[in-house]
Amino acid sequence: MFTHLLTVVSSLVPSITRLASQTDLSWHSRFTSSVHAFRAAQLQVIVNRSRDVSPDLEGYIELHRDASGLRMVFDLIELVEGLKVPVGRAENIERLRKLAQCAADIIAWSKVRVFHIFLPHLNNGVV
Image 1 (tube, rainbow, N blue to C red):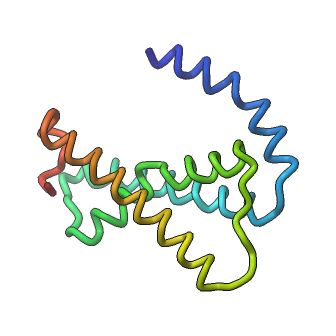
Image 2: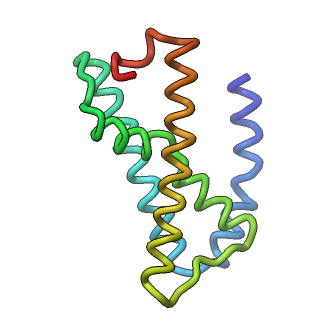
């Protein structure tokens, strides 16, 4: 299964690279930030598991928001669909950022809930 997934993802790299070369600097900045946040969160999850540490609820929410990789997915959807984050009024940009954050939280928490039900040994005692 993972070999097939790797093959599919690898086949997408040239198209994504071509699209990314045609986008603006703000998208690159957001995507780079999303990738760094994802990698840092993944590392923190590994460290927490190796030390048998569970973050408090607020820390858990924050960690899994980035560990889910959804910010990267949202950035890639924006790229592939040719969407543009509107520039202009700061309150509109903040609403859009908050909407994406809430969507990521819902999806990440749904995943946590599924793990809690079907794979309770992976929930780190938080849920």
